[in-house]
Length: 197
Image (tube, rainbow, N blue to C red):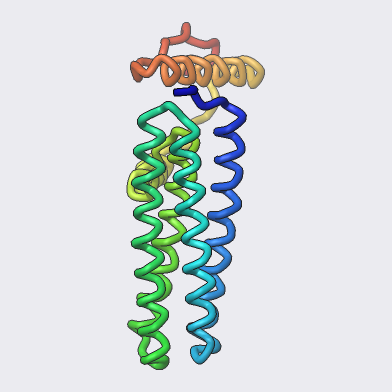
């Protein structure tokens, strides 16, 4: 069996990007149609169905174009999740059509649309060999926001040099990048900077 080339994978990922954009657009149109023109939900639902088929085909092409089992598994699982989230959005749009004045049906439609968009983002991340679940991203953002609230601006040390501080930040960032590349999670500790940071 021939090993897939990077060029084949790049083309497959480009097609997947185009297909996810198409589905994202169709999902937005379905959402808007359910809210503003509920009598046109049928054609909008068919548009979403056609677009999700395109995503499934493009995801299979990505999986066939790489020898990386992690990417293959992630992409195929991501495509399955996109299919489930698409069905959920169509069901929510139909419920909104049947109960146009019900705020719960509007909320459910918005939530289903967002869940589909999150699934599309996770699928694209998987195609790039990264793992991006929205819960993990949300958790990371919450930690960062919490830590940012705990930062107290301190007065610079006497003799504080902004150029030295910038070099120190670059050194620390390079150490962190190196640890991520090694995958061991240990940052190489730079020598203490002139500012005492």
